[in-house]
Length: 216
Image 1: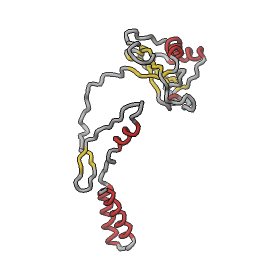
Image 2: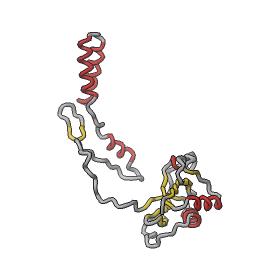
Image 3: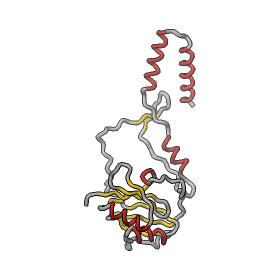
Image 4: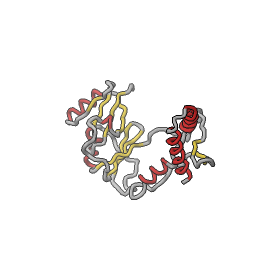
């Protein structure tokens, strides 16, 4: 409440003083406004509000990111504590372990990922310990986890080019060979808009996939 009161007081003072048309007062006022507006202010609990309002229910428990902050005794404003640009956040990131992909029919998805793309199932991953059907597919040393679960994303109205949608990118050695495979199976695709060797397509559940060519 104190912050709101202060804000309205400043607005009233600016409009009142601006109507006086006194040059010296205008200069002094402008100097004060500049001093106020150049001070960075972080919205209080903006991230916290987002995660609390978008979480919960049957999707995910509500949670909130904590931001390093200190309370200004002058106006109850949270200010971010200065952090060195040389500070490194290190908690041991190694690689992407797997990507979860939702599907309506596990059999139909396996026809695509196994039968057309040639990905192999990782039999070492447990399938019977989860409350839904699924399969783990090898993509190099990482995996795609197919999960037979309801998909909250719409199947229609998605961008024609998968590069403008959420997508999983898989590195391959020969885009031209994959193009022949997709053509033979009658699966539509688009090429990279930048001209690099890459193909974008979708699986039977409209999940976008990118295949980009890299040197072996």
